Length: 147
Image 1: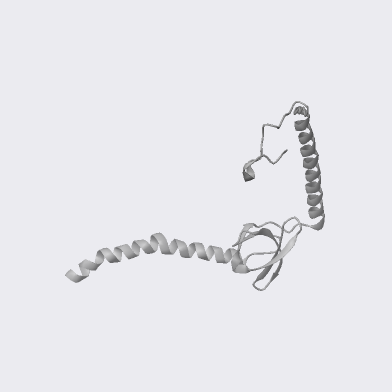
Image 2: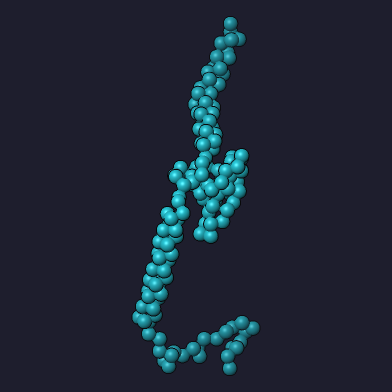
């Protein structure tokens, strides 16, 4: 009886650890496996390496995603992906509209950047005649390189 009472705290610690750590982890893993099983075409996913893209093809455990501006296609194993956004597949017209709006935004930004750069240089007055660089020397090799 005394030997059994000595093991009661150890048994309680194991039971508490099971309910606080092991069981929630098993539940979380079960949810992740269910999510990976339900990946479908059009879902936005992230790979274990951080690559984000949309699922375009599923064949067994190999999932092809399309990512980036150039619409690069990459193949991943199902277990390397996490679903970020389960969205319906984008139609071709929706994709063209999105690309068109992105191109317009890029053009507008380029125009803005060019305008702001021109304005910045217009405010800067540089008088070459009053600038004297004779006091500056290049001390590499110990002497004045300009003579």
